[in-house]
Length: 228
Length: 228
DNA sequence: CTTGATATTGACCATGTGGTCAGGTTGCTT
DNA sequence: AAGCAACCTGACCACATGGTCAATATCAAG
Image 1 (cartoon, each protein chain N blue to C red):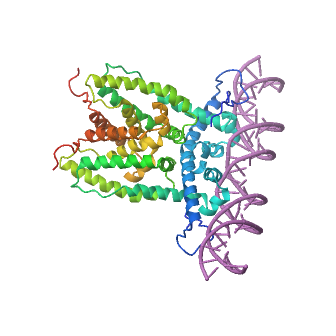
Image 2 (cartoon, chains in turn brown, purple, green, blue; image 1 turned 60 degrees about the horizontal axis):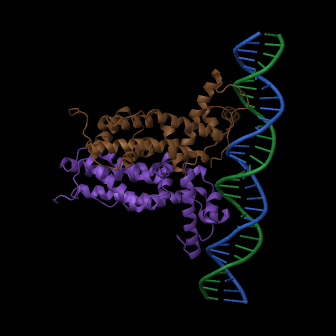
Image 3 (cartoon, rainbow over the protein chains, first blue to last red; image 1 turned 90 degrees about the vertical axis):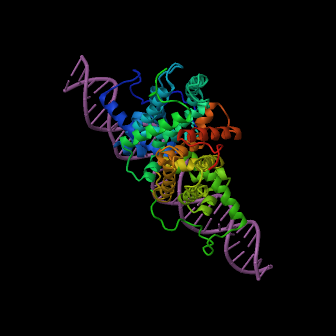
């Protein structure tokens, strides 16, 4: 789907400076991005219409196109923003860290991301669901490397007897899916639990639950015990 | 979204018999449903076009409408088919069953469903992602009841000391998300693991992994030990 | 005030959309 | 062979789609 169009339709004005600012521009762009994230998340790329985005942002359609150049450009920009958020929580870990601490931090931060940016989370999910036409490169490159680096550390932990010798990649997928679920399937969660929304308390409970089950499930003893 | 249109556009002919058969009809309907499932799963309800479905089915657009009446009707029918599949694997369990056996069967059957019907699985996911406009009733009714019935049994197991006192609803969500992941996020899984597809062996490995981690994680001892 | 960049937007266009319909062909039953 | 229901489909419709453009309005700097 994403044909290689080198320059993705910047507004025809202000070609000079890379990122021209302007208070109006910033404010409007923010508004548009937020609205677009919601619409794309709900209807997917094809199902979203610029008109709907414009209405959600309280602007005429032309104005949206003026700032974003094209529907495709807007979508790509949203994906990039989401990947940036994702990357931001991937701080480095080493073999010498405590598995329990790292895994808990992993679950917590991923859960927080899904909660802080549910629309972005869903946008990402919709993109993958549709076969990831815009994210192939990212998945097979950056993200793959990141996963494999983590996986190697998990394996070393297993060798040192700090955790069970489970397949580390499946473990990462387990954490991803379990945390992502509460953003992507929010409608299902709310419908089944009969709630209007998930409170902070709910989220904390879920996080604790997931941490407990997953850590115990792969034989990691919580850090409450005596340190090494 | 789903306005109450009592009669969802049956083909104007054959009004008499409820479910008129005919070999041609059956064959074509199957073809159309399969094609539609794929297109809806990839692009969501709004993003899917009847034209695209028709092309995927190798039929003219008019023919698709002839059999299915309307895009909406076709979509609803697919959702219902998927819910039926889902319901089919929900056999009854009782407090006296072995938790380990039940949980493993739960994981296995859910995994098998996601694998046997990946497009249906994704279709369902897209529907939920979009706020479940067509499935509100199902979620807040049937499915909710089912979950709560199971939850009560898990609680009783916990009381009898057969498993840890974890929140049973979060546990069910954990199993759902972990298994669903391999259908819905297939593109991500394949991209990261660098595969073309998940083999039967892969799926068996994943199932074993999930069973082991989740059972251990909530303190259920595998059935290999002496039976009650 | 003047000037030039930025911001705004309604009108417009080619194409795609779901859906209808009339007029045809096929195939089974009598 | 006749008749009739099922099947098939190209032409068509009103409307939504992404995108362009020219005309105007706003605003900061000289």
